[in-house]
Image (cartoon, rainbow, N blue to C red; front, side):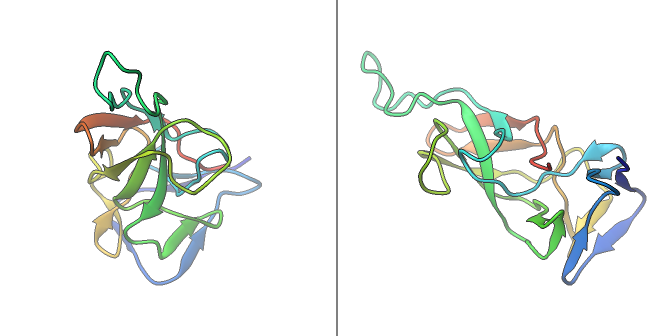
Length: 148
């Protein structure tokens, strides 16, 4: 399995599908890029503290901590057919069949782990980047790329 490693100053643009050799991952400086996913299909991208709504002493409507990135703001470049995340939308909640998003909406923040590889001028997000769950402002940490 051979990974495709991107490094240096690159600005990818247009319709482009990147992939590693024989199922390898697309990496930026050795760190996997994040790609769009769906709740209930594969491993979640990361975790965040549960959203306490309704407030205690009631139990939360959806106590799930898993977070999925389901939309990239700049989805023209893909890795293995899935859009590389360049900021975007995420959601937190319990996995299972159903709509693309989980219960609690969130935003993927600008990349802090990748300052050099961009898609149309926006840095590609990588494992270790963060999001914000909107109802609480709690941070979500992305520890899984979503690549196969």
